[in-house]
Length: 204
Image 1 (cartoon, helix red, strand yellow):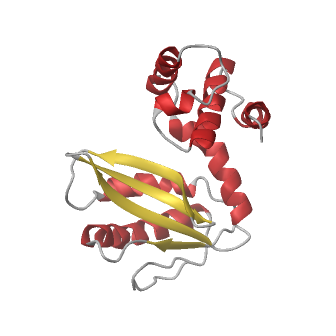
Image 2 (tube, helix red, strand yellow):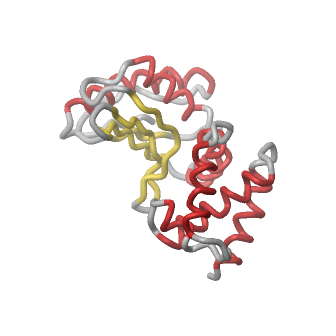
């Protein structure tokens, strides 16, 4: 697929999905997606080198960095329509959600809930905590699961899984199960029994 064909596909999709986003931000987001896909890398300089734009790489890199640093661009809002469509299509079968807490740098953890899809983990909701060790606070987990709950299609069945070899993650899953149970039954009224935790966690 050519660069411009790929750009055209995403340009049309984002125009439908992000109706409240200004055209300039949609354009930058479209080029970000195209550059990520074609380069297979997350470095901004590698991404912009895949843009067929006759401008110096340094200038394009600064442009992309300004877009990524723009406080008005909120990733959770940008991802929301994409996540809803992914979940709606995948919900023909039970949805497998992966919960993970990973140390990032010297003093932070990334807590993320992803959809397992075709041997990929597609991020749905995430947050940072300002400490590298220890269990994740219940209120942080509850807020994260509520965001995921708001993305689920009606009647979805969910399986919650995680890494049984990490004690910190295991604690997170136990609390997350209870939180997920409350969140999902609050509005969806899904038949979710209290599952036992054996390597992972199943929420039906």
